[in-house]
Amino acid sequence: MRGVAAALALAWRAGWYLLLGHGACTLLQAVAPVAVTWLTKLVLDEITVPGAETARLLLLGCGLALSGAATALLPAATQYLNSEIQRRVGLLSQDELFAAVERFVGLARFENPAFLDRLRLAQQSGGQTPAMVVAGVFALGSGAVTVLGFLGSLLVVSPWMAAAVLLAAVPVLLAELQLSRRRAAMMWRVGPVERREFFFRELLSDVRAAKELRLFGISGYLRERMTGERRTANAEHRRMDQRQLAVQTGLGLFSAAVAGVGLVWVVLAAAGGQLTVGDVSLFVGAVAGVQNALVQLVREVTLAHQQLLMFDHYLRVVDGEPDLPVAARPRQLPPLRRGIELRDVWFRYSPDHPWALRGVDLVIPHGQSVALVGRNGAGKSTLVKLLCRMYDPDRGAVLWDGVDLRDLDPAELRRRIGAVFQDYMEYDLTAKENIGLGDVDRLRADDGAGIRAAAERAGAHPIVAGLPRGYDTLLSRMFFDGDGDADNGVPLSGGQWQRVALARAYLRGERDLLILDEPSSGLDAEAEYEIHTGLREHRRGRTSLLISHRLGAVRDADRIVVLEEGRVVENGDHAELMAVDGAYARLFGMQARGYQPTAAVPGEEP
Ligand SMILES: Nc1ncnc2c1ncn2[C@@H]1O[C@H](COP(=O)(O)OP(=O)(O)OP(=O)(O)O)[C@@H](O)[C@H]1O
Image (tube, rainbow, N blue to C red; front, side, top):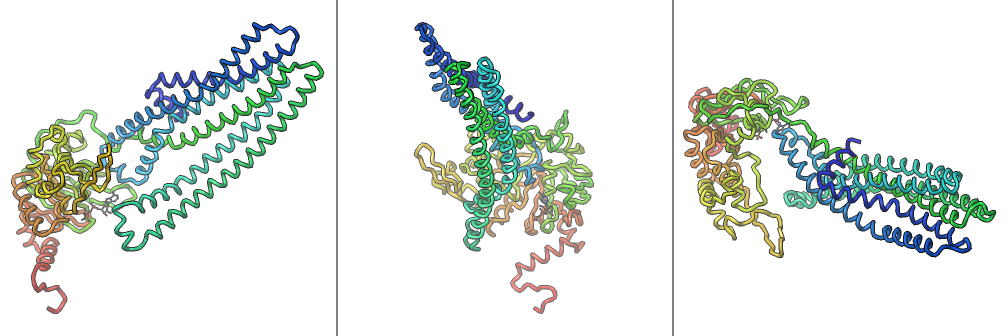
């Protein structure tokens, strides 16, 4: 019921007058068949008695014509109103869904596959369900009006007839509802199977997967998996359809038998003079009308019921609790003066996961560059996520000039940070937008000079300038064909993309903290040297955190922090850490030897 109320409320907000119009049309449509049957009876009764009144017959004829016109015209109008409601609800629900998604300020939901699955289902159902629920609710109302109308009409003629038609309708209703429940259960069972099929289908047409699929020759294997899932789903659907066929055939025979017996009885009664010809016609119309109305009603309600199950995903996303508590009265965030501190920070992604950070103590002093190094999985990127408050620590705190990040407005905090993430984005947009998104106000103001300056600093300008449409070139593999102007995007290489991502961070200009997570991993040696020289200049006197596996790039940082299994194991500048001769010195020595012409590997004969 909560889903029905929410769907109707959404439809009401999307266009209450359409909803009312839809209701009025549905009501008229429900009344029309009763009116036709009733008027037919009156006409027949009138003409079968001697000395029929012409004026009365004319009036009844007009009534019949009007009811006929309503029956003919109203379905199209109802259909139009339903489609319009669906369009408007689609727009509104999409907007509300993504507004709700925006309210999740952290990353936890997005790194949870179950939530991503729910979000996909919510997108599908948000646009369709409310219109279907509207149709279902109205079908319920109109079905009830039609059935009651026929029964009322019959009641006037013969209470026995009304009772017989009502009794005959009960098993039909129960059987159809049982079928509906079974179909809903089947859809629920088949859901995961169809989602797996969707996954394989996407994979088989994904440009990023195409290379591996071909090289490893695994397309056939994945296609078999996809087809297997479809076969499983088809088998479930087939079983359900066969059950429906059997039940509906039985119901058809039962209804025909009831109608037949009733008809014989009515005809005999009419022959005996207890009923009129009009009563016979009313009976035939009422039996067919009640049965049709019930079948129609159950079908619409079944559809609405199935959709409501899906709509639950939409409601759960829209009504979802915030993933991070946001302070009711966030503290003011003055420019960074002293620095950022992680104080005994413990963090794990969920209670089922191992600790990713185990009591990290770390200071990034204002105006200094700090480098973070460590093996794969040591927790470096996790630490960055906590610095940007994508997650809160389970224990300990991250402090900005002594203020806990939890007491700040996350949006305001993020405005103070510039970053190149390890998994930076490649937007299917123009080069100008790809850089301009670093500071959307400057992009909106069309600050071409600023964007170009950022590109030049990141070494991206020569690349972009060489593209067919310069900064207006679409950096995409996608094919957009709008108003006949086919526009095929230009894909960049990995290293070229990295420079664009760096330009995006540079465009943010003077931020309090610059985070660079592997900013040069995809670059060639010359480009890497160039970028790091530029970065060194840029970081001088600025508060920055650089993560890199290339220790040559971090050696001149003011402070180098070595992370191992979520703990800080060394902390000092390059000279200090080399003197300690610990993890950093070992890693640095190993990399340095790799560049020697005759590298001596410990334990091996030269
Ligand atoms: N979204 C996530 N959910 C669960 N565990 C995660 C998630 N992201 C990272 N981890 C785990 O947390 C640990 C630290 O990962 P993190 O990405 O911080 O390491 P890293 O030091 O940045 O590694 P790399 O050098 O490979 O980038 C790893 O064990 C990883 O498996």
